[in-house]
Length: 319
Image (cartoon, rainbow, N blue to C red):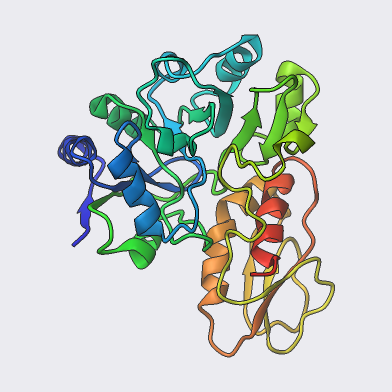
């Protein structure tokens, strides 16, 4: 049975004790709910893959209470420190060379010479991480490839009975996963758009390349890079200008006419609101009766729209 814990001193103490004992605990961050395990315990990390039915050992993000704790496990140059100063705590993950002597289990980093690290924003999560006293590996708390969870109820739907506990810290404010920037090579690279827009990264450190370099073909240095990911059960059709009679509609701005069921990410066209509601909307539409697919209205490819469109393209990819 999965325990439901409140974000009070008793709940935090129980969650920290479970994590230190090698158990799995889900917790809400500003992005999505993560499925946490002691990142230094290979058996605990392996249990994450088993609970999620994750098909391969992708790298996991290790979470820390502050930048000093994170940089104890990786080699951080000036660009990393500039980004940390600008965006931590917050929805940014940095991929950096693993520091010699790091206790993070090799499985957490998929055996690579790099680690993905971040400092989440919510004070309650950072209090939990400080109480654990070890880095906590945490991918999204859902079955592999399915829609990410943004509430404790979403976690219970997918992983109830498979994990020790859920620390219920309410709905996630950002609603899409963290931005991932790889600083392990000769230039900064955006591996995954997310809660920190590309424009903000460029303003902080200058030009940022898009995607992994050709030399990394087939190498996953961070999560969220599989072609099919974040997928509901129903097929997803992007850039819809019309809606079929058997389709539900994921709307942005004034909705198209004729949909059987409609979830509007943001009637006013606000990208931050749309990002926060994206995964909840996909889940709601996926549960509607008498529909055979989900039509998605176009979303601008700017700011948080890049992260939203990235998730939608992966949701619509062949499975």
